[in-house]
Length: 572
Image (cartoon, rainbow, N blue to C red; front, side, top):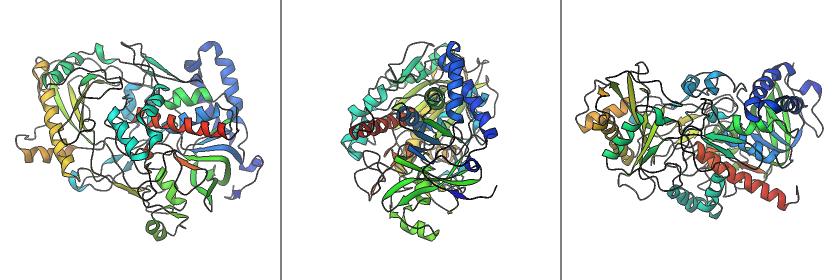
C-alpha cells in the first residue's frame, strides 16, 4: 500500500482503515482482562460490547484526541468517554498488557530494554563518570504505569503548596487533594488492599503487602534507630518519618495500573476508540488553533480532526518532541532542523527533572524468603536541612539485592533516592524525523547541593542496612570498594548512581509563557484547543515516586475539561 494522506469529515475509506488482522491480538489481550475487571458473570456481554466498540471504523473526526495512552492518557480516556463525548486514544506502543512481565508484579524488571520500553539513554553525564543513564518509558498501553515497580505514594502537602505557588490558584492544595481522593480511599491495612474508585466504576487496587516478609520489621526498626518517627505513608500528611510501603497491585500479585483499571473497563463504550502501534507525525496547527493530528496508521499517513480538544499525554520525554515537531518550541532549535516555527516557546523541553538514586546491596547470613509483591518493604524520609519543604531524601528497604549480581534470597538492598533534586536538565530535538529519540540531558548532580544530598543518602543507606536491628541477617556490604572517606563515597556515587526513572517538567505548567508551556488549565500558551496533560506539566519534582502524582494532576485536568464542556452546553 502506498503512503498517502487522507482527510475529510466522514469515516475514513476502507483503504485507510487499520488492518483488522493486526487488531485481533489487541482486542484479545484487552478483552481477556475483562474477566478480572468486571467478574466472570458479566464477561460474555462485556467481551461482546468491547469487541464491537473497538472494531468500529476509524473516523476522521472525534470530539477529543488524546495522544499517548500512558497513565494520564488512560485516565483521560475513561473520564472523557464517560461523558458521552467521542474519544480517540492514540498510542505509539503495543497493546499486549496481559503478558506476564507486565501483568505479574514480580516480573516488572523484565520490561526494561525490551520491546515494551522506549529504551532511551541520556547523554553522557559529567558527574556520573561520563556514563549514559537509562531513560526508559513504557512503550505499551498504560505507558510507564504498565512497566514500573508499582510503588504507590501520595504527594507531600508541601509539594502541593509549591505547585500552587508556581502554577496558580487552579492547582491549590485543596483541589489536588480532592483529585487524589477521586482515585483512592485511605489505604487498607493488611493484604486485602484498597479499591480506588471513581464515578464510572473503574478501580485501581492499592495494598500493603510487605508485613509478612522477614526483612520488613528489621527495616522499620532500623529506620527508628536513625531517629525517625513512624508515620502512615499515604495519609496526606508531611512525609517526615518512616512507614510501610504500598503498591498498586492485587493481593494475588497482578499489576493494577491505569491501563488495567481505567482503560479496560471503558472499552465497552462505543464512543471510545483506541489505536495502538500508531506514531504521531505532528499536530495539525492552523494559525493559533490545533485542529487535530497527523498520524501513521498501518504505513498510511492520515489526518484526524478534534472538534473540541487535542490533548498531548505522551510523557515527559515524548510530549515535548511532539510539540517541537509541530513547530511549537525553541525557535533556534526548530529552525536549525528545518521545522516551520508556528510559535516560539523557549520552555518546551526545558526544566527536565528526575529522582536519581544510589543503591547499596548487602549480603545476608541466612537464606531470605522470596520477595512479597513488588519486593519493597519500607519508605524512610529525611530532611538534610537544605530546605524547608518536603524531605530531600527517600530511602527504600528492598527485599532483594536490587541492581546487584547476586541471587535473590542471598541479600537485600537499601536504595537512596534524591527526593528533591535541584539540578535541571533538558530534552532537545535532534531530527525532524518523529522516529528519532530526543537528546536527553538530565544534568544529574550538576548542583552541589544534589551531590551533598546524594552523599547523605549513601551514608543513610549503609547505616540502615547494617543497623543493630538487622543483627543475625547482615553479613557485610556486597561492594568491595572502600567507602571510608568523602572522596571515596563520591567516587562510588559517580560510578554507581543511576536514573530514578521519574522524568517530568519538560512542558511545565506555570504563570507565563516565558518560563512555562501550559497555563493552570493545561492549555498551551497562545494556542486554542490544545492541552498537555501528563508528567511533563508538573513544574517541580515531588518527594515521592510519581505515579500517584501524575494521576492526581490528570484527574485535575479531567475535571477541568468536563466542567468546561458542561459550561459550553456540550453535554448535560
